[in-house]
Amino acid sequence: MTKKKGKIVGLREETEGKLKRMVTKELGVSSNNVRSDSSWEDLGADSVDMVAFVMRAEEAYHLEISDEKISKINTFGKLVDYVYAKRMTRGDSPRYTA
Image 1 (cartoon, rainbow, N blue to C red):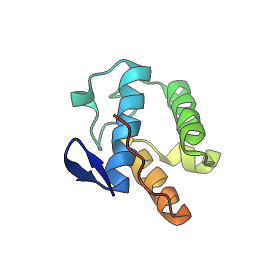
Image 2: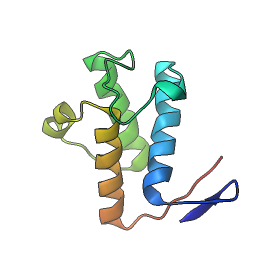
Image 3: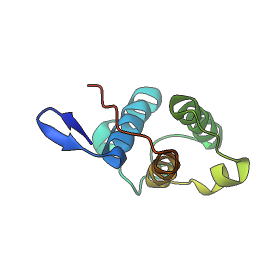
Image 4: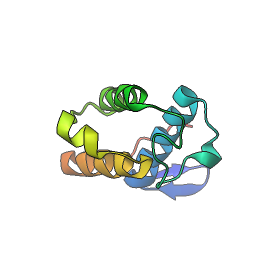
C-alpha cells in the first residue's frame, strides 16, 4: 500500500486510478462517467479504440493480454480486474504518482 494525499491506497485502487486517468485522457470522457460497469461503447470507444487502449495498458503495465482475453474484456471493470490480477501474480507493489 502507498499513501495518496493522506490516504492509504492498495494495488487495486492504484491500478483502477491509473487506468481511469488513461481512459479520461485517451478517450476524452469525464472521470465521473468511467465506472466498473462502463462498456467501451458507453465510453465512446469502438472495437478498434478498445483494442488500442488495451494495448496501451499492456505497455503501461508490462504485460500481455491474449486476443482471446481481449475479446472478453468488454467493460472498464473487467480490464481493471485483469490487470490487477496479473499484477498480484507478479507481486507488484503500488507506485502511486499524483
